[in-house]
Length: 573
Image 1: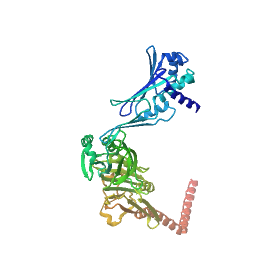
Image 2 (image 1 turned 45 degrees about the vertical axis):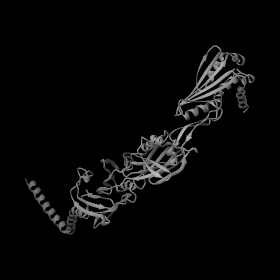
Image 3 (image 1 turned 180 degrees about the horizontal axis):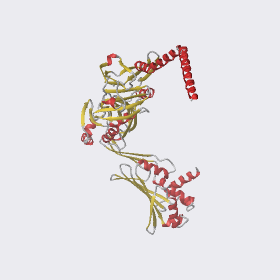
Image 4 (image 1 turned 30 degrees about the vertical axis):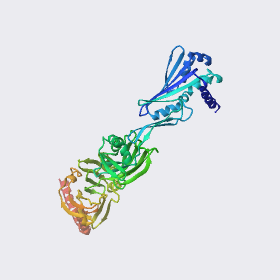
């Protein structure tokens, strides 16, 4: 704290010097985008240098080289009597300038810059809470800390000269802190920014500038010239006119870019990202961000009333100079037709292809996001085809439980179930239920489509029905395959039954009953008759056991007698 007090005392004492010691002058060359150069020249008088500086010129050169901050560059020159060191602070923007100035100061800089070049705001405001002497504190401090100057002589060493500001061909001059304010304002009542999402997916925006009659009387020609690159229409009001500019874009970023042009701003921008809704894969939630800059339309208060609406919803209504806006909206891609083709083999092997057709109502990028939602272990071959009329399709293969998990994740309230039971009289029975619940379009119009069911299991007789029955417009039963079904059937498999239902409505349930009674009894006959014959033979043999025993005994005795007779004959020979 004592050091800071001393430095402040030292800087104030520099004002006592008149025409000797170190003369400090400053020039600022500034552009509209606040890029430029601040030049600070320190001229050391040879006479006073020898009187106050305890060192050589080589020591001073070395000190400046070692102590000069990174944000500055410098050059040096000499005319024999004076040595001049010129320091350059180059900056590319207001933020860049603030950062570099902060590195040089012992306190936080406060910089105000506004430039207006519109019929409503015109002129310059440029203010700083520091001087060039404050920016050179690092040099004063280095000289004192290295003991090249002492406390008594420091008050006689420095002399602050003027600071010149050059801006767009005009020069301003000050010996103290910069404080320029020559802004003029012509009032604008309000700005309305209204955006609508069209059915095609494009965004249309209308910006209305509510201009009082007094302003029109003063600057009518300048106002027309200011917006001459836009398609302008006018609306009359009780106290002036409303200047309307309408435009559209394929996406929000392009819309914000066109808005930036209308507002004559360099800092307005817009971004967006889309995510699918959890309850409807054809509904997109869109997160919007937009930065508005209306600094070319301000009043003396430093703001202008702005109303911002999106799809009829007011996002904000406030007086602003600039504002960061964040909001969400949603858009639904309506479906017009569907086709669900199912191939049944067993509860462990079910295959289906699902296709949705619709007219494109969202952007290509949003379609790609929508497509990514159709995923899961059983889902494959997700495709988008077509131009004006788009078809999104995917294939499912796996067990009923696996396919149900993926499909119901996409379409809530949909479900696939299968139950089996076996009886000695009827064989194996299978009840398969396929409940489909597709999302409604925002216009409430019912969907139409086809549900095709085919069986490749030769052991089951088939019965398929759809509920509610009034959803079924037509039913076709055949044994020939359709193109879609053929894509799901292997080369070594055959279609045994096929039902094609033409439907209306978003929700329905397909019920399939498979019965193996015929194949069961065929198997029973195939294996049962030989077994029965064998059993009958065994029973016959068992009941005739005594007779068979006597027969074998008689045969045995007969054979024994014949053998003995044969042996006797051989012995006699």
